[in-house]
Image 1: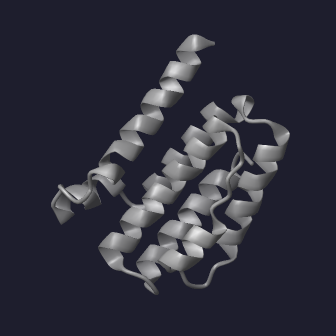
Image 2: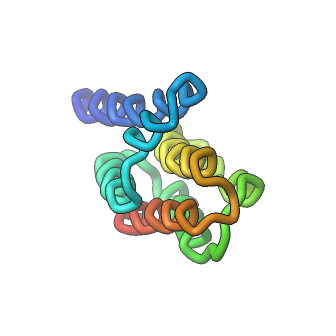
Image 3: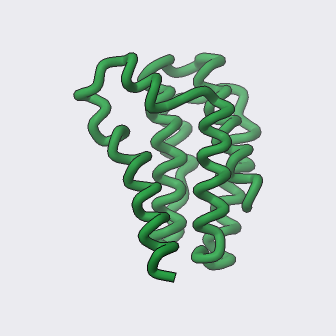
Length: 133
C-alpha cells in the first residue's frame, strides 16, 4: 500500500511541478510538458485509476460532478474554471483535481480563454476523469 501511495504522489508531483514553475519555462517546454489533448486524457485517466481506491465515495461524486460540468462547457475561461473546482476535503481527491486543473491552466496560459484548443483540453480532462468517476 505504501508503494501505491508513493507512486501516486510521485505521479502527481511530476505533473504539478511543471505547472508551478511554468513561468520559468519557455512556451515550447510548456507545450511539450502539456502534450496533446489525447495524451492529457490518457494521463488523467491513469491518475484517476491509481487514485480511485483511495478516494471516498462523496469525493468521487464531487469529481464526477466537476468532470460533468467540464464536459458540458462550450467555452472556458479562468473564472469559470476557478468556480468549478471543488474542495473535497480528501487530500488525494484534491490532488487529482489540482493536477487536472493544472493541465487546464497550462492550456489557458498557452492558448488563452475562449479558444477551441483550450476547450479541447477541458473536454479531454473531463473524459479522463469520467473514465473512472
